[in-house]
Length: 330
Image 1 (cartoon, rainbow, N blue to C red):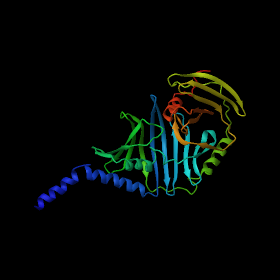
Image 2 (image 1 turned 135 degrees about the vertical axis):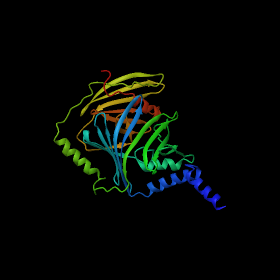
Image 3 (image 1 turned 45 degrees about the vertical axis):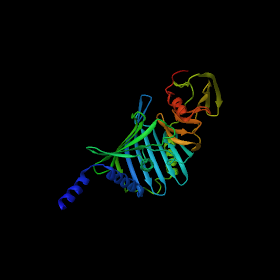
Image 4 (image 1 turned 90 degrees about the vertical axis):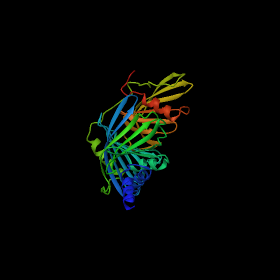
């Protein structure tokens, strides 16, 4: 009889990621992240949009009391941006523009975030049908995601090694195509940070010092760019150029069944902090702003906005992501 009980016990241990173990693995990972006082994650992020791939070096930092810092460097053009959350608010800092944008937002909790552990685990816990699969190299956890601005972003896969450490995150669409992938290089679960590490003024000050010693580059809206995607029964009906204090503002008006407006204008480098409504969001090759009615971002000293009270967020993004900021017309 004892041999039978011993056999059954050993059988349970080697069964793999069965129902009991599946729940145990998810619960242990959730508890580990929930109890963290800090962490520092480094990795490589790949985003796939319209047959284009954007690659970023990522450093994500967290400290208890709701402090976050995400440093993104576009590997194609070395363009760096920092998303920062502290007791004063949400900031997106852009060193090349000497700009700090302050957002009114619930980031990072209002949407899924592939580069932050808490939202990843929240998605896992919020899906009653989340699953776990045992593989030869470890485990794969799968759950639904909540990217409200990307309705085709359907699920995530969390890859664990045999020691149950997170090594990779994937976000997939309804057809199981990978739309984003984060390969984790390292996670320090006991990270220590300087007192001013999450202080926005630290980075704004360094931006000023950096750019004051740098020759200012002037840019103008010499080349008008047009969206390659326009909704059905909608056409360009107006094109206006308005003089501003810092250059020009180009307004493209599209009329028809799905009207919208595209604005391109020079940005001022006088202000250090700009106040922005909406949420920080990766648009094309930069971090921009997204609301229910607009998508805005900056590239090469020009600010681009797509605005509409008719299009939904998915269509706004589709128009925005079809705009090639390497001018296609004049």
